[in-house]
Image 1 (tube, rainbow, N blue to C red):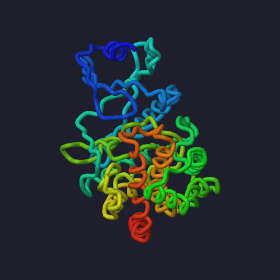
Image 2 (image 1 turned 180 degrees about the horizontal axis):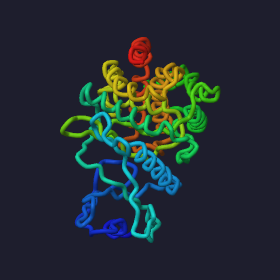
Image 3 (image 1 turned 90 degrees about the vertical axis):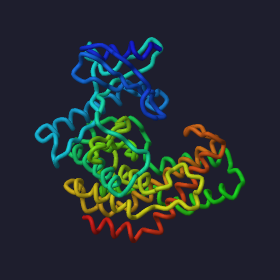
Image 4 (image 1 turned 30 degrees about the vertical axis):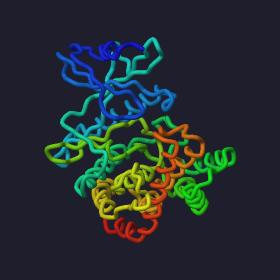
Length: 365
């Protein structure tokens, strides 16, 4: 592998690299903040993509360029509508016009614009923060609502296709067999009782009730960047998972991650709760900016999406535990089992508040 500074210099047509340092806490790609002098923008992001996750990085870059160009066109007439800025990272090109560099060791590098004067948080801080997370996702979906989804490549086949995860679970269970503990027995019963949930969104898509659109794929709380002066959302980042799909997976994932104040890594799984006030705040941010493209049927499946994604992630964690922790990084042998318990308890909490979640959706339409 070339030294990152040597790679960074290929993305600096003007000026020179002053400094380079590791940046962020991502667990997929290696990320660096590059400082340059003599260029229009004094910073940019340099990343080495993880080939085990993104097996076709060229398609990832193609999607990023399509999305970046489309958002730029949509924002050009009014770049600060609603009195605020909003942006997504833009792909930067090398001196010879390429969107990536492959070093002698075969590593795939790319550069993205740096979003200045912005910060992120790993968990929801308050209702105002929840509204801004909802707003950012709604604004992103709206900006891409007129981009034909077939223009984007599916860079992660099977991602957020719940029936596929259930089929994989069945294969692992048959091959490995369960380990006998009260927690494992709870998870086995939980999955068995909710198997029928798995195809709810995919069936609706097959029946024409829901239609594919561009989706973010990973709209977790710390992918929304906030202006520290105003607290307003100014960007949605980490677009490597953008693909054609159902926006319901994004909505469900944002609410699943944002409305659990204890987070995914808590040991007190039995006290995990879906917080309806945060749900209301996030939908207050999302629905007003998304209602121009949402259909009547889209609203019908909001609750199903929220419940399904918590179940799906719990299923994925539990499957990985049974398989020997081969996909998700685990700090201890029981780590993914503990994560599964959190998501299953969150699913139970969502189910117990079905009426309240439905009422929130109706009130905000």
